[in-house]
Amino acid sequence: MRKRPYRVSLNNPWHQYLIAVIFNLFFLAVLWNSPVAYRNIQIPEGEYSDNCMAGTDVTTYVSPARHFLEHGGFLIREAEELVPDYHRTVGYPLIISGFIELFGEQRYLLPLYIFHCLFFALAYPSITVISRTLFPGRDRMPAILFILTLITGAYWSMIPYVLSDLFFAVMLLSGFAAGVRGIVRRSWWLIAGHIILIGFAAQIRPALLLYIPVEIFLFYYLWKKQGVRPHGRDRSLFALSVVMISFFVMLPSLRNYANYGFFGPSDIIYKNFSDFLCRDVLDNNQQYREFKENSREYSLPGELSEWIDLQKDFSAEVIMENPVRTAGYLFRMSARNLTAPHWHYVFKPFWITHIKSKVSHSGRAYRRTAPAVIVFNSGRVFYVLIYMIIAAGMAVRLKEGVFLDETLLILLTAALLAPTIIAGGGSRMRVPVEGFLLMYSLNYLYMFRQRYFTEKGAV
Image (cartoon, rainbow, N blue to C red; front, side, top):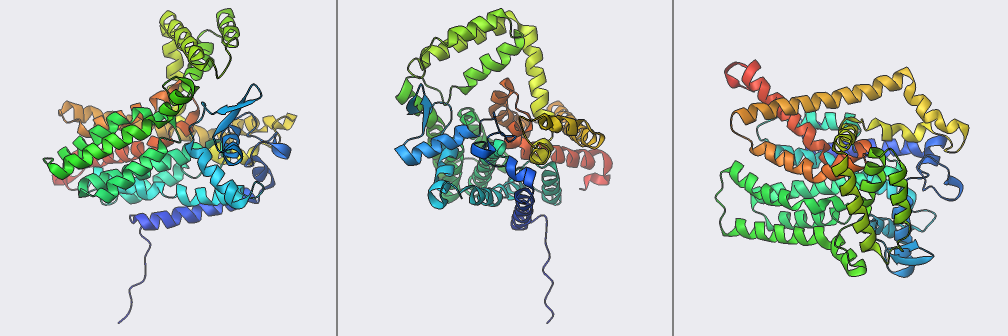
């Protein structure tokens, strides 16, 4: 009997993962063997201290990792003294420290990149699992979603500046996928995986402090969609998941409270309000400069709580006195985060040769060339179309009085995107919800096709 040939299916999550791994490893090989790109994906220190990562927050993850191996704690240097890190949560420095311990200070970077290639590929099957659970019956949707997500470049950038963002996003997507399957199957093992993955994601990015309402609604959403009346096991899974995830997302805040007496996962949100929003709204005027001088009078981290109170009070005053300029700033940052294409970070290692030289501005020059303008502006147009489709779909659903799916998307974007608007940051801030945005837009296109373009409602 003749054997059937083995075929690759883009609808198959395992096939998606293998394709993505091959693609990621190939892209890493290109980066590693390009002299300019190789230089730019190194940690910006020593001979690479002036690469295109200079001045970014890359070293704020590496330094605590080294201090953890040397001193047994995630520490930073303040006023010539090592103190517990209150800027960064400990999850990503923990990953880096593991690779430094295993491979050594001089050789850990390539194995770390290879690990990221393998891990980032999980984004695609995770998105497929989520889409099949939220929108069953869309037979071709996983394959289209896989191709679209791959083309956007959202989950295969290898520039150090975005690695922690991508790691957080993929950890979150994997945990969310385990969660939706665990709720539907009523599986203790899947819910345990969901708790562990979401819990670890909360140690990578402080934004998950706002995730608890999403977790509560997710159970209600899937019970409602599946027509399930929750009984003993369902309620036990719900209680376990909500309680444990609430604990994990509060761990960074509890750590800072124990060390410094303020309850918050990081000081960065307050710093972003004053250093980005207030500076822009006040146009760096005398009022803002006086505030910065007052901020420097506080001894950090000893007076961290008082310093944060100053940031909060000043930010509230600026916002209340300048509501129109504040709204304009938030609109610009929202547009930047929502429409910037991911190709900026994908190609950035190839176009900047030396950050401090006159050639360093070749990055800007490159982006002004006709091909680059077409690519990047096409990316912006693509995302504008995505949001138009989502808005149209939501309008139709709202008119019908059905808004269950839409409520989940709104809660997710509010929890994961809203805190990032304060400082802008571009497309890397969008990666946690990228898959959901593409997923919902495709679902609405299926809905429009079924209702308006297909006879008898057949899909």
